[in-house]
Length: 236
Image 1 (cartoon, one colour):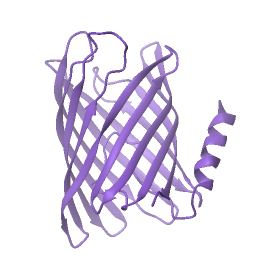
Image 2: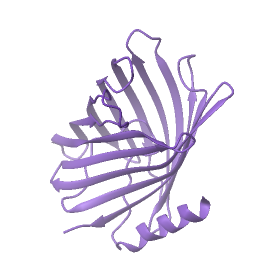
Image 3: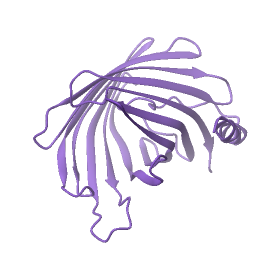
Image 4: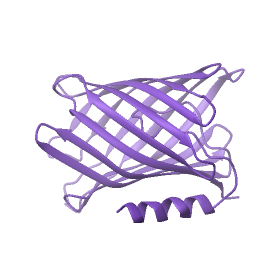
C-alpha cells in the first residue's frame, strides 16, 4: 500500500514545476480560495481511518480535484473508496465561487456540490451540500469560517442537517500547522463536535498533509487520522 502511495505522489510531482497548492485537506472545512484559471489542484489521500468504539472504517484511496475555470471560480470533485467493504463511499461534484474580496485580506464565497449515487441500487438517490465560506488573512495566520446545510437521499432513510467549521491555519516557511473545530448535525440526532489538529509540509515538488480529528461529543467519531499528498499543475 505504501509503495502504491509513493508511486502516485511521484506521478503528481512530475506533472509540473509550478509551486504546490495549499488547500484544506486534511481538514473538514475548506477555504474561500480557488485554483488559478487553467490549473488543476490534485489532492490524493492514502487513507482516512474512522475509529469508533471497537470498530474501524478505512477509506482508501481518496481524491479531490479542483479545476480553475475563471478567476475566483473552480469546479471540484471528491471521491472516497471504502476499502474494507469494497465499495465507493463518497462521490461529489460541484463548484466554488468567491465573488467578494477585500484587498486580499478578506474573501467570501460559496461552495455547492451534488452528492452522487454510490450504489447500483435502483432506489439509490442523490443529494446536495452547500456552504458559505469566509477567509480572513492576518499576517502569518489565515482564519477560515464555514457554515451550511445538506440533504442526502442516498441512505435508506433520507438525512438532512447543518454543518459549521472554524479553522486557524498558520504559515511558517515550509510548515503550516492548523487547528479546526467542526460541528454537524443530521436530522434530529445530537450534534457531532470534533477537534482536528493538522499539518501541511511543503516538500518542494509536492506537499504532505496529516490530520487527526478527535470526537468531543458521543455522536462524533472517537478519532480519525488521515494522510494526503497534494500537487498543482497547469492544464492550459
